[in-house]
Every structure is written in C-alpha cells, then in structure tokens.
Length: 167
Image (cartoon, rainbow, N blue to C red; front, top):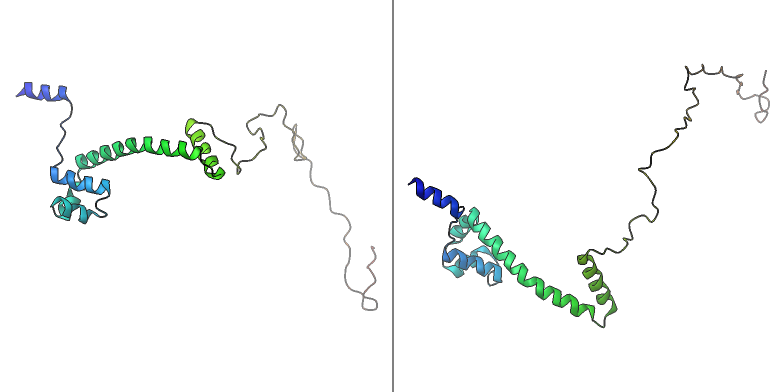
C-alpha cells in the first residue's frame, strides 16, 4: 500500500474526470449552441441543477478554463489575421487604429494626450534649503511689533462724506 502512494505522488496530483454529459453541456456553452446553463443542460440531457452543481467543483472549472484558453489560442491567429487585413484597409481611420493596436502589442506606446507634456523633476533633492518663514534659524524668533495708531471711523452727523481725522 505504501508503494502505491509513492507511485501516485511520482505521477503527480490526481485529476478527477469531468463526465461526458457535463463536457457536452460545457461545450454547448463555449460554442454558442446554448445561451443559458438551462439550455446547455437540456442539450446534454442533464438537469440544470446538476450542471450548476458541477460548475461549483474545482476540477470542472479547471477543465472549463483549459477549454476557454484553447479557444483563445485559436482565436488569436484569426484576430491577428483580421488586424493585418485592417492595416491594409482603404479606410484610413481603421488602418490607423489597427497600426496603433499592433504597435501597442509590440510594446511601442504612442504619446498619450492626457499626460502632461512638461516634465518637472519632482525627485530632485535641493542643494540648499532657503527658509522664508521670517524667523532666524540660529536663535529664537523676535517678538511681534506693536500695533500702530487706531483710527476712529464713526460717521460724522454733520457731514457723512467727510473722513475722520487722525488724533
């Protein structure tokens, strides 16, 4: 018995099999033959509850991820062919967008319109620091100055447009 466990560990983790009916239902979902889980279950001849329960299992989701990955892999060649066809298109806007996309995939990014065109060196450290606070850095700050004379701004009853005089 111990030898069987050692052999199983050498082969790798145990992979559960996805049933044929579940695979048929998932294929119907992936290929577009069914729009909903209930339709896919009807095509495969199982109940929709059984398919919902199967979709909660990790090994079924892993199988579905592998299937979708292979679909994307096959679709990449078709998409690349379409992009190159658009690159030679008579419509200049679609040719421009196709070329910008192809260059973006290749790693060449055009200048973004929303980015600032001015580069301010925010990371540069200053050589000297100038203190503009008004205080002296070698001792305590001087006391504030006394306030100046106060003006009496009461309105004159005789002539309201005459300005008050300073005493």
